Image (cartoon, rainbow over all chains, first blue to last red):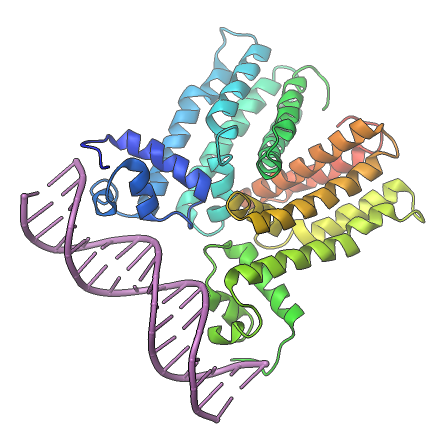
Length: 189
Length: 189
DNA sequence: GTCTATATCAAGATAGAC
DNA sequence: GTCTATCTTGATATAGAC
């Protein structure tokens, strides 16, 4: 039942959920159109191709994460531990506990090897994620250690989402989340 | 230039490398045929469908890992630390340092949500992987801790492969590898 | 067991009416 | 801005010759 009108941001948001669940190559323009209440021909009024749409989705994710999540790591009004907790909670909601898992991790494994443009945006996202965590861990650890803990945390969270998705259980992810917090307490978890 | 003859195992091995690099949905039967020196019609002499082929590939991976890698964890002729080193080195060669990353992780994120048959084999692989590591960590830690460390290690290695693939650097993976070893030394890494 | 040829279908994309 | 209709391509899969 086609809608009368839809904003570009709404298109991106709905496309995101479809890509996250079905993956990039397995998603058809008709899937996206249906999810947006459009007929598939109409989609090309907004985006010239499926690839351009995915690029726009990833760029939108990158901007949202930087503005609403990673930026919290640099908010000097809060103590580092609170910042980290806030970042992790927001990551969890925005990225990691959604149906279909993590659009960033999914798309990285499926397409980053093959598509340089996707790879570029995905690297930006991971760069900003790593920088935010390294900045926080840097309040307790020397810079080298902080950077290493950031890599460990990101790897662990992405791997934990994979296991949580596969087993249909929150446990692996919750464990990763707890350990990410402990790394600010001078525990070398 | 088509070969004269090819064994089923050779087909599986070559198909595996193609699926690992290109992903499942993005791989065409013609890609697989070319990699095997066959014309695409000939492929259906061995496998009734692309899905059946992928299933066979995953089952083959599962058997190989259990026989050649995970089984080492239970070899009582060696001390646990040596067993763990051996398991990790073999995992590294078989699964994690190959071009295109890890077929198990890639296929999990791309297809496990959508295809119950793939999900079954993939779960088996992760179950056996987790059990092998938990068994080894169990030589130093209580069972609950050992199981948790196994989950942490698997998650971290899969996430590290993702980052290593994306950045074209071995570092994230090597770090995960080192930490996996330290977890047997009573360090809660 | 492998090849050629082909059937069938779905997907990405475009054109033009409303 | 959305719809209908259609073009084109490429993919899975099959049939039958060699």
